[in-house]
Structure formats: structure tokens, C-alpha cells
Image (tube, rainbow, N blue to C red; front, side):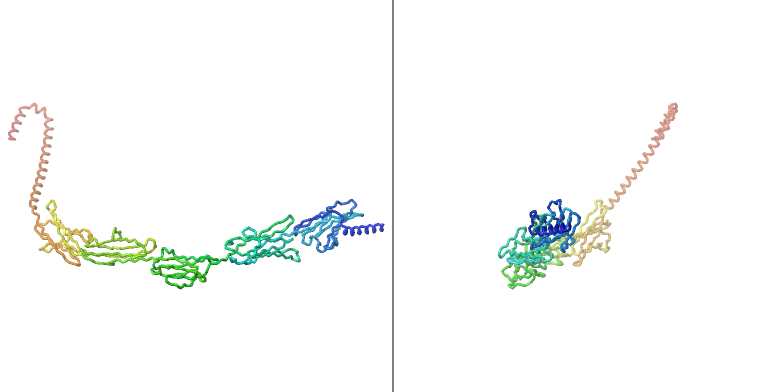
Length: 570
């Protein structure tokens, strides 16, 4: 029995050896697995009824086998060979499916499932492929700037931890960059980590830029193969600062050159359209052939009208590239003759002129006592009403804040002039005497009665307007008098008199008054008598009606009474 078992073992051993050499069985089968995942390899053989055990092995590069797992069909036990790289990573199921956890690049081998019977060995080979997705590509070592018409390294596109290695592509604004001599140079290289067996891929790009590349995005991508086929991963966009030389120079004036006036500060600003822009320029002032070196600005303080002219600026290293602008410093002069306070005599002539000198047409406005005049004043013969405060004002409408004004305070003086008038009241009882006075400064008026020298204080005065006013008194003289009106100011004292006769109709007026009073009294007495008579009559009528019967019976007596009454009346 022992001899038979030994013979059987020798047969199995021989079969395994011969199977390792002859490799009969099923054809090639490939299992694709992602790096780090679990590799699952079905045995792909039908389990024979007389199966003794199943084994898995892999083949070294030289073809020699390495057994890694064993499963008995009778004892249902699993044994794993002492292979360090697969320790604690293997699992052999009842149907002889082998699983390898945490897939590594080193797992890329040819594995063989072996089912052994007493008289035969069946094999099913499986090829394992492991794929590792690379990291997202990144543009590194980026150039701080690119210069037009110069071939310069733009940067490097790097992608790490790939298996198998992939391919890197560069893009400009989404379009693939192809190598072009003198303009696009791409150098690709890859490196494998000896420990992880993963690849690091790097592609450098040298690029000759133009102004058309301003704000253009550059990207790169890595194309690799995975378990499900080819895939591509893109980097983030990178935009580069493009340096290019200045091709044009411009000059600006601050504030706006249309509104510069004397006394302003103006700033010249020179700009170049290059990148980076020039930091220094030469500024040329009117009449100065040599330029003034300065930053991109040059300031002139408190400019005068003689600063009007052409201003220029240029590059320091390229004076032929120049820009210019014309500046006008606006000015406004006003001359008022005469001005200030002027005192003239009434009737004098006074020529007045307001002369304007300006950088452009200016508007002129005349005001008198804050009231706008329709035309400029002209005095051939001064009157008191001509006195007042005159202002000549001018302005340049297009230049804010540019205005001038001068004033003339005109004083018109005159000696007092008197004119006296009188007016009798229609009743003849009083007379109104008026003293009209004209003069400046305002004359003081005094009334006196000639002879007695009495001063009359009860007067009425009008307002003083345009050098004129009057004073009036109302009198009822009982005798002829002479009234004197005196007007006096700082220039002169003027006197005028007026004879006023007594009231001639005074007695007639008194008689008429007495007559009127008599008539009124007579009328009142007559009305009183008429009232008494009427009252007696009414009383008598009432008495007669009460005794009518008695009177009728004594007719003779009534007749005698009537006769007596007639006699009495006669």
C-alpha cells in the first residue's frame, strides 16, 4: 500500500514537472486590474471528478515556476506557499479562483491554474495586466514672462505615477502645438521609479511668442491606457505675461487741456504702448530743444499765458518715437476806467470804459446796484439818478472759474437848488407852501418867517430820491407875511423867499357863517311852532267830536262864539 502511494506521488511530481515544461491546456487569458485593486483570476477549468488538488503558480521571466497556493479536494484545506511578495495577499476559493489584493505593478505576470488528477494535470494560464492612472498634469517652472520674437522656455508639463507610461501633448488656446523649428520646441522624457515601477513623465516647451499670444491660455494633457482603454487628463490653464516693445508714444494733459487757465497746475503724462510700459521719458517744453528726463509724469505749477505752446515727450533710448500736444493757457484781463469811488458834479461829463483782453471771446455784463443794464453806461451830463454802484463783469464760458469784475462807485454832487410854490385851499381858509429842493449831499431844509425870524417846525417832508425832495407847510395868515426856505449842504447854503398875503375873504366868510347859523336857527324854530300847532289842532279835534250833540243843540250860542272869535282874530 505504501509502495502504491509512493508510486502515486512520484507520478504526480512527474506530471507537475512535465506540465511546467509542456504547458498543455487552455489558451491565453488576460485579466486587467487597476493599481491597488484586487486581481481576480478564475481557474477557467472544469473540475474533474477524480481531482486530487488544485494549485496556482506564476512563471518567472526565465520560465521557471513559483508555486503560491494549494487546495486539496479531499481535505478542503488551503495552503499558501512562502512567497514574500504575496504574503497575506492571496485568497483561493473553492472553485479555485485566485484573488490577489492590493494589485502592484510587479503582479504583471503569467499565472497558471493547475488541476491535478492521479493520471493528468490540467492547466489554464492567465496573464495579469496592471494599470495606474497618472496624476493630473501640471505646468511647472513657468516663465514669469515671455518676450515677443524670442524663443524662450515656457514651462514644463509633469505627470506622475503612471503605468504604463503615457504621452504628453501641449495646447495653445485649445489647439495642439506641433514642433516647429525656431518657434516650438518640445522635449519629452520619462523616468520609472525603481521601487514603485511607476513612471514620471515630463515635457518641456520652448515657445516663440507674439502679441497675438496676449491672454491666450496654454494647457497640456497626458494620454494613458487604463483597464477600460485610452484616457486623457488635462491640466489647468496657464496665461503668461507677454513682453513686447513700445511701438507708439502718447501724451496726455491733466486736467483737460481745454480748461487750463492762468494759475493752474498742469501735469503732462507720457505713455508707451509696450509691456512693460516705459518708466522714464524725455519731456520737451516750448522753446526748449533739450528734453527733461522724468518719470511718466511732469508737472508745471502756477502756469502763465506764456506757457501756451506745443509740448512733447519721447522715449529715452528712442527719441524719434515722440508725441506732442498743443496747450493753451487761457487768460482774462479787465480794465475799468475810472474805478473805485468817483465823485463828480451834476452836469459833468464822465467817460467810462471797460476793456477786456482774453484768450478767446468773453462775455461782458454791466450791473448797477445789482440790476443788470442793457448797455454799458455813458454820461455826457450827469444827473443825480446816475449815482450808484456800477460793476463790469466778464467771463470765459468754456473755462470754469475764469471770470473778472471791477466796480465803480459814482457819487454825483450838487449845490442846493430851491423852487417854491404855493396853493390856496378851495375854502380860502388855508394856503400850502412847498419848498422843492435838489442837491447832494442831501440838503437840510429850514422854514422861517421874515421879520419875526420865527422858525416853523411843523413841516411835512417827502422821501429823498435821486437828489430831490420837498418840504411843505400849511398856514392861514391873518396878515401878509414873507416865508423863507433855506437849503444847506456841505457845498453851499441857498435861500429863497415867497410873499404870502392875508386871507382877504375872512370877513365875508364870517358873515356867511353867521347867515348860515341864523337860517339854521330859524328853521329849527319854525319846525317847533308847526309841531305845537299840530298838537293843539289834534287835541281840539278830539274835544269837538265828543260834544258834537251838545254843540248842535246850542246853535245860537255857537254862532255868537264864532262872531266873537272873528272879532278877536280881527
